[in-house]
Image (cartoon, rainbow, N blue to C red):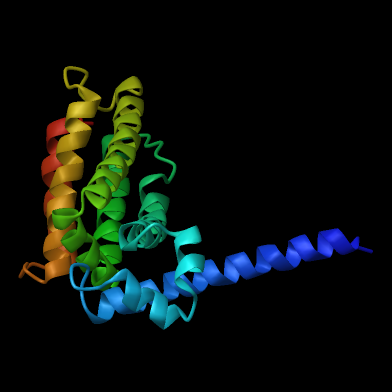
Length: 208
C-alpha cells in the first residue's frame, strides 16, 4: 500500500505527463494546420487548454516544442540507420545499404507533413537548426562506423576516410529526403534509392 505522500507525488507526476502531452499534441496540430513561422505559442497553449504559467514550466517556446516532436520522428529514422550492419560480401553490403536507403526515403514520404514543418523551422530558427546539425552528426557517426567495419572486413576501400564518405552519403540522402517531402522529385523512391546505392557502393566497396 502506498503512503499518502507517495500517492500525492504519483498524482502530481501524472498531471505533469498529461499536461506535457496536451501541449505536444496541440503543437503538432497547430504546426500542421498552419506552418512553423505563423504558429504562435499562444495558439498552442490555447488549443492545449492549459495556463500560460503551466505551459512555460514545460516548454520555453514553440521551438522547444518542435524539437521534441522532431526527436519523436527522428527516432524512427534512427531505428533504420542503427540496424546491425555486418555484411559478409560486397553484394551483401550493397543489399543492406539499398534496404536502408529505401526504408529511409519511404519513412520520409510517410512523415512528409511533419518534416515539411521541420524544414521550415531549420530555415528560421537557430535552435532548431542547431538541433538538426546534432541529428546529422548522429547519423554520420553511425554511417562512419558501418564503413569502418566494412574496411576491417576487407570489403571496402582502405584509402577512403570513413567520416568523409559518411558525410557525402548522408547529405545525398538528406537532399532527396527533402525533395520527397516537398514533392519535387519525379523519380520513384525505389529509383532514387537504387541509384544512390549503386553510386555509393561502386565507389566504396571492392569487387568480390
